Length: 185
Image (tube, rainbow, N blue to C red; front, top):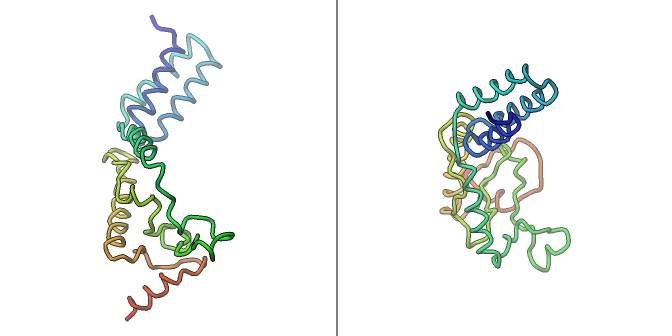
């Protein structure tokens, strides 16, 4: 017979490693059940252990978070590559080095997202997260796929931007303004 705290430890690992982003709330369920078990103790604490176990058994599963470890290795290998200029602080070095030029403020665009490059040149186009089609992760995966398509289209067009609808004010982007004028005809 296993110590219930050891079982909860394994359930906590399972909630992130095997359920992961398919159901991000799974970790919270297990943590809450473990805390309740610690407060209540045995024998009634068995209900909390049962609830956590059944929740994890029944929910959607995904291990896509393991991709982070590969991403960390890839980024570490490319450490010598520089951050794109438009992401560098333009308050101090804009005129001398062009820092901050061409930056698009994501919150000024629909869905608070804009197709601009965030990765160094050597990592451009790399995909670090391949979401499963399970649960919450599946929903996010559809959105991420649309954004990747827009990002790729913007890179191919050489525009750097694909989303053009402004819903709030933000820093003026001359490149975007030129693109909007051309697109408007």
